[in-house]
Image (cartoon, rainbow, N blue to C red; front, side, top):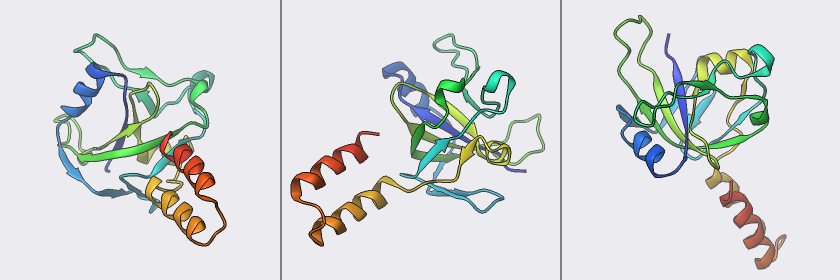
Length: 165
């Protein structure tokens, strides 16, 4: 069984440095057993935690020995939040597991590093399938601009919202 982990970015220089050092080979996309395909630029939405008190069982801030942090499950304040996938990495399996190699995707949102086991989180309903990519949203906005539906000013406003996630 493959496990897919998503790592959400950026807590600042130290955390970014730790994420950038994550081992593994970069891959362009990953498909889960449910046939959801996760790609760079996709937006992933957290739905609701299934753990004690509504915490996320499969979405967590990973331990960071360099900064002295232990693994922490995300709480209910992250319900409904969205993350953009920046990179996906295929890693070697842990020596004590029969599972296939985990896949780690680096995500960004404002002020958080987090990991998501996509296979488990998807099965539990903690995350939604990819909504759309930033590139797809920008293309749609450009088409609306070209069709005259949006003014240049409206286009720039909407573009800033898409890129500001």
